[in-house]
Amino acid sequence: MVTDSKDIARAVDAAAVMELLDSRPRVLALGEPTHGVDTPLDLRNQLFRQLVEHEGYRTIAIESDCLMGLAVDAYVTSGTGTIDEVMEHGFSHGFGASGANRELVRWARAYNEGRPAPEQVRFAGFDGPLEITGAASPRQALTALHDYLAAEVDPDLLPCTARTLDRLLGADARWTDPAAMRDPAASAGESAEAYELRVLADDLTSLFDEWTPHLIRATSREDWDRARLYGRTALGLLRYHFWMADTSPGRMTRLVGVRDQMMADNLLALAERGPVLVHAHNAHLQRDISSMRMGDMPLEWWSAGAIVSARLGGEYAFLAMGIGTMRHQGVGAPPPDTLEGVLYALPEDDCLIDPARLTAALGAARPAPRVSPCFGYFPLHPAHLPAMDGIVFLKDVLQDTA
View 1: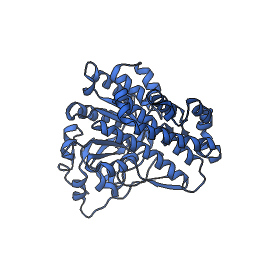
View 2: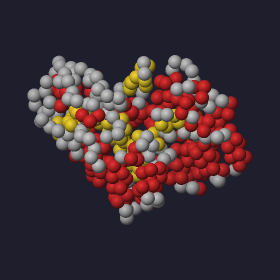
View 3: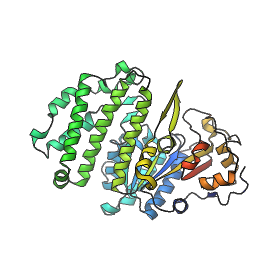
View 4: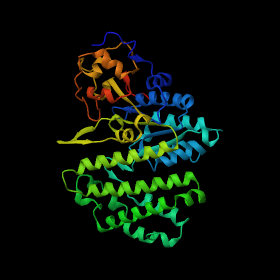
């Protein structure tokens, strides 16, 4: 369908990305169509290193628990802990087991060695403290915010004591019961204590905002940023637990939507600090509405990337990732009439595609959507081409050998 690729495909490197974008966006997002494979992450590492070294990006954010990620950031900036410890305790979703993620952390630590703080690269998780089996207790985030405020403002201004929070939170097991993901009755999210905690969390974050000038002077911008993270995470978790307890038809749609809103809030906060590189699943970064099926239930929601793009406009850029084959995962050669099939027919292997030039080269031809050949793999959708700033295409992804 495309006879000449020279104006469409180029090597995947920082120079080609910036040429494609014309200017440096504040948030530059690179997606992937599936999780658990290191080859796409190896390419991510190579590209992100170049963008840090040559384009001034100073934060790398990945789809992992935002609170756990604080330990990784402490390691890469100051050497706190060991790499084994942060790979085990600094990542959610099992991503700490990835050799490519380990290499990213190792490189960031080496890059920062001897550099002043403003020149160091920072690490962040931007997902909520959520797993497919459920959500964390709001205890860590809520008590950390309360502790921060209690040390700096008049006790009479606090809406509650630490003891009250502890009583209302109760045992963490009541929040983390995996049965709650499928059985709303197993969730604590609509209990009387949960309602009271949502009010207290709102009051604590309001007090935090009111006293921002004093808090930044009395502590530091870094400490204030961390406390702000605790506040929005506590509110997001309490909201998520509420919807876990809900029994309406919109329950699952609200859950995936709340998760991506938490992601978006974290990315927007990171973007206030400076230019951010982001890596996550395409479905969390695309501008078009995201969709998937859970059993026989179709879900549609707006991704973190769509929310950030709506807020930042041209300061957000999205590079989608597509894969031709991944045979060890059941992904064979794509049908030639699909978008991946068109790209697979190009002579280049791994390459960066200009979506606008690809669309022009296709002319009246319109590729069909590829049917997902395996669980967890989301093909590129041809209708999303106009909302992509670029496509990173990996022709053949082989099984990891490390």
